[in-house]
Image: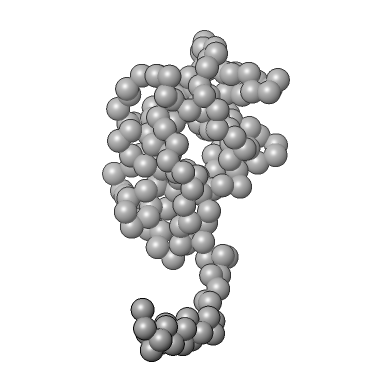
Length: 170
């Protein structure tokens, strides 16, 4: 590389360094954990997700609603394992060793959501969320916060944890 090329590159680097970095207004975004309930992709706000663990030692709970798969011992606490596929009317595939249990809590209520897999984290712009499709059940629509442009469904964990439909008290 000749001297003139070096000078040009140095000048460009200095100009780039002087450009202000546009700050992202984080209040317009939701950080979420994405997961799969085959064949659909879902997300849940990161602040509610306490941990993701491998699904094991599930104890069935007789008389529970169909969407309650059972209970598990999570760090000495009994937590219900919820099958949202049943609640949302999705096709069942059965449990495998790949299923994960996402522990979700608001500090007062804790539950586990059974997922076919965990995809990762994502930032979702609040302005891009649309209403759930009219084809989903009323129960599902109540628990949806919105749908991203690529079809990922953002669940409202706050509503889930407070919903009387999610509590088994018989």
